[in-house]
Amino acid sequence: MRLSLVDQLSVLLTVLLGVILSALFWFVDVRIDAELYGRFDRGLHSRLNLLANMQGVGSGSPVPTRLERWLPEYAEHGHTAFYQVWDAHGFTVERSESSDGRDLPAPSQLLAGAPAKLYDVQLPDGHRGRAAVRRFDLPADDPRGSLYLMIAEEREPLDALERSLHFALLGGTALALLLAIIVLRWAVVRTLAPLQRLGEAASDIDPDGQPVTLHTQGLPKDLLPMASKFNMLLERLFATIARERRFARDLAHELRTPMAETRAIAEVALLTGDHEALRNSLSEIGKVSAEMERVVETLLALARQEAGLDSPAVEPVELAGLVAGQLRRLTEAAQSRQITFQVAMPHEAWVLADAAACERIIANVLGNAVAHAPVGDTVAVRVLHDEAAQIAVSVSNAAPGLRVQDMTQLGERFYRGEAPPDRQHAGLGLALAQALAKAQGLRLLLELDDASRLRVTLGGFAPLPGDDESGSY
Image 1: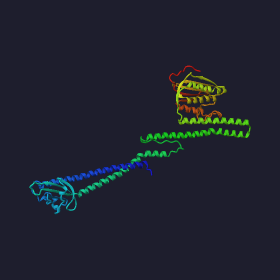
Image 2: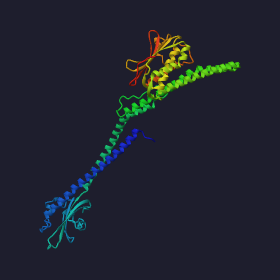
Image 3: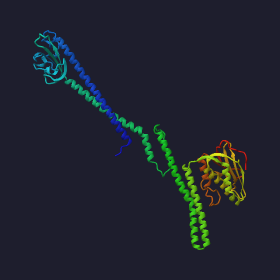
Image 4: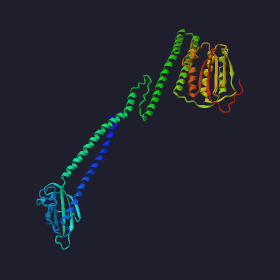
């Protein structure tokens, strides 16, 4: 089973805190033990020296027999403090009244040549104790050779105190760990709450629903970049889905009529059986297929531009020559409708742009002007510098069928105004031109003047240094 992030952090922090508190408990416990028993041992050592001085051990003076009169803890009724003196032959020289005639453990083997020693012993009353023993060398003429002075005290009260402190420290550590776990859990849940809300919001996103974004208000600054990036990805995702739906919808909308027309032509051709009629039907089917091909290609080009899949290949482009080339290609179409061109442009106009995209934009704009201008109209074509000292291409033609309110929709997909359906023009040319211009950072402006002339201006071209503006067609 996979743990949640809250559970993982809680477990990790609990383990780390447990290790830290355990190490702290061990350190404090060791220090307390060392201090307690160190003080006890130092007290034993001090009393050992005191007894040695009071009894005159090692000074040649006789050993007092009534020491308990000055140190009542060693009297008969005492059961916590003891002392005893041996000579080098192991004979007892003196013992405390509290021993009740019983000996303390002989120290000769324990000393092993050391002048003094501290060790644990069993006291005459059967309790556990702590002893300090010291050897005192006597003069060479003293038959006793040397004396061993041992004092011992009961350590069970000290052990009980140490155990009490140990369990108190252990209980405090356990309680601190428990409280810390509760606080850590609360802190982790509270800290990760924004991330959990983000996760819940992300899990509720429906790709088939309305476009949504994650709320970033109140998020910690560490999560803001992630949430912002995720929102950008969401916007791109929903934009991609919208483009796909729009492409499918537009394709179905635009191909429905030509496909039905193709089927009808084929059915009629099968019924007639006339070779000439069959040839005409096949010719019509070819024209309808060409129309569908143009629609699909234009829709694909629009989709690629809107998705940012086609990056502009910027290079020096001679704009005047490009416009002149498109005018030559449209000469036959213009003559068939008795349309003339009024051209004003320099011999050369070098700009930085995507040559293929610019050629397609200008071809669409000029083609629309020739196709939709009234018969016998004059199409004005100009290459000029605009107000921002940038080069622009302007194409204008009479548009008596356009109204001011139509300008808000002009350039949208499949918009033809009140014009009758035309196989050659699906209403995608200006939409594609606007997408191509936007991809290059250019402007495609559509304006209708008071004389009902439509002017389409492609502007924003940056001229190359040394561009020659002199000379016009």
